Image (cartoon, rainbow, N blue to C red; front, side):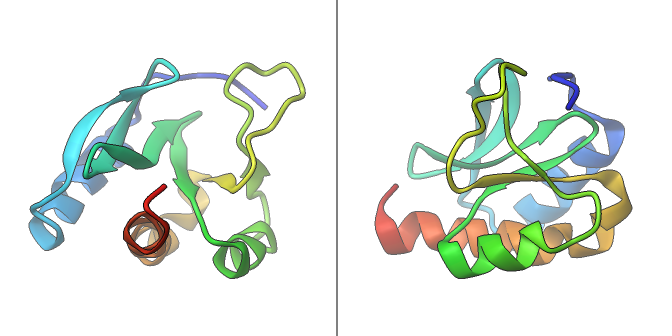
Length: 111
């Protein structure tokens, strides 16, 4: 897995669309990458040309079943972060769905 933390144009465009739906989100950074936050808690970001999201277990299992979805390993050192997954650009049609799930999980768990 590449550790490219430069946000793609696809991600930046998606953030603007998502802000139209969820104007309460903030933008910032985590692990050296651009991210979206709710109440100061990161739930999604741009990584390796895709969208990385933090999901509850059931949504994470669904996302992990997608072709080419990968574990989020920001260091590239073989230590993926629990509950986080990268959805590549080939899954842009699902980014809204999973960003909404991540957004909801932040409130539900306060994480």
